[in-house]
Image (cartoon, rainbow, N blue to C red; front, side, top):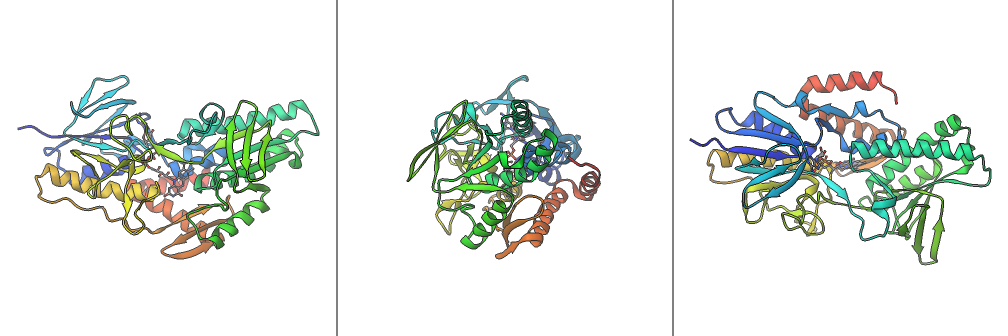
Length: 407
Ligand code: FAD
């Protein structure tokens, strides 16, 4: 009697919660469950911008994978997925042997999308993983150190953030909050530091209505951020950046560029293995990939159409978390030979963007929230997630950590 093998690729929000649910749903004798991830920790991607800006210690947002999975039930493999061979039903890893599967969950997250802008990948920084967030933090600090060493009172120390979506806005707000401390540390006049957000659309935070976006913009301007709206990044080079707007081209150099302008699904699987649309693999109603009855795609690798708008839902942790539950239920049903699979029906609770540590803005259950209330909502969203992942034990240990660790 063949015991089916379920292989889950990626231990981000989507992958780790799928495993957490599968280990509850299926008995030991019903299936083998294997989780593969590059690192032996899970991180809260929604906080990476704080690590990148240096306003949050990374220990607060990393959780050892083995501490939240049942290691008796689930085999965890720390390795990098190099290739998925869909016809052979196996996964090639960087170090280990090929892994065959009966059911596969593709949850490998995102990569930056460059939209063909020259120099973005080579010369700008992107928030795509814990390692990249650490790199951004140390680059920012070394730019301050180098600038201080040059002692030139006429130059500006310029940081340009490309993109005014969630990530770009949350990141530049954190950076703005860190700048006074960095200026003190390196004895630089705050007026010499420029933080510029560049956005192709005429407004920021396109998913929010105008009143919330304007509130966010004013809040950031009060922290010293300036905006170039209706302006695109034309090219990035080792020295700086060329912008393009109706007024023509503008050159800003020297400048450090952090690109947050768009994402696509992980290219290990998107298009290379499974056909993608706008960089993400379309998921069917039950979250499987068309023509592959035993392969599920969830999280940022997937695109799932919102029936109300006819467009894919934006890639968010909220969607990834909800998909993980449907995905696990459907795999359990298939393992048990159940006749019908669940349809994924997302119930959007809303979203909140932080504007530094003192302000936030968002929509929760259809209600617009700002300021302290929005900050509280964001905290509740995070706490709920931790509870879902590791129960009261994880929640309490994290609360204790956030009391004791200061960046
Ligand atoms: P991820 O969380 O990215 O996980 C992918 C996993 O796959 C990672 O563990 C990675 O190490 C692993 N992996 C990748 N490649 C390989 C490989 N080749 N081999 C092995 N392992 C691999 N969403 C919200 O809902 N609300 C927010 O407030 C919000 N804020 C955000 C702020 C920032 C700064 C960012 C960057 C994103 C934010 N998002 C937010 C979006 C959200 O973080 C993503 O939608 C979510 O992380 C998607 O989950 P995932 O499991 O698909 O991918």
